[in-house]
Length: 379
Image 1 (cartoon, helix red, strand yellow):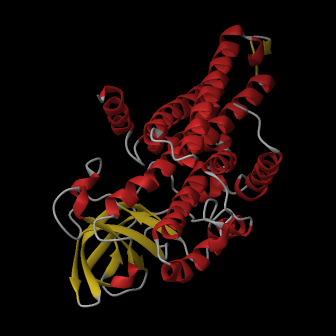
Image 2: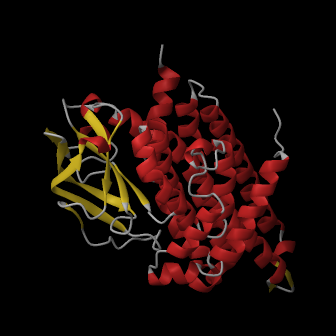
């Protein structure tokens, strides 16, 4: 059990922190206010290898581990949780194609994803199938050498902007065994997008309905075999849950660091806020909780890297804890700022808004508790 980063991890952590400070932090408030998708910044990130973090090197990726990815995502999220979280989604799409695609699919789809000349989106959630993902109703029927897809996905990050969509659709019986995965390319007939949602947070990335009406997809675009889709989706979510927990860590850490500086600078009743013991205790608890959450995230990432049988449980535990704690720490940081925390100039309220959705997506924290409980109670 070595809790120190190795030399390589320390180096790319510094690289990510510098990139976040120089390329994300100066623009995060404006992107949020204007709902601007940071395409150029993301392409700069791709140039550093951050578009295929755990895509294999032989496929053109960076070939890092899930633990490495968690370290990187935390650093990026310290500046902008929304951008870091979209990068996590994009990496999930690239990894799914690398892990479950055939050589032709990897050759066609990975090169533009790894440079972010193409952006990726992941399409599982439907208007009537959120937490109960296995009840999805989007259908894919075979017609010669093509599948014809009909249905609607909702709350899709990158909807309308992304170029490559991994879509889960029903090809067979009810339940998880009847679901298959497909790669859809923007611009194919029958694929369209609803208007962007007006969201509380994650405002620099659009979330739209993805609509399929007689959408014809070559059979060569199916990932894996028929019926593999739900398994592919859940494998992707194990890593996504670790990343979204790491994003919560970064966003909350950024808020806590701002609160620390505010306490050192702000004076009331003749002394610094940092000199009031009650406020010191708040900061101490925030630092302790974040460190505990980080240990859980890193342990879950290692379990996933090592393909341990309890990796899904550990990822669920880490996601539940880190996203709850991240939001709580952001809220405390806002409180420590007083009225200044409530206005946009200080960046705290943006982080709070961005982190709120982390407790909902990649499986709600209630579903995380259900996964954990089932494991604890199994005989």
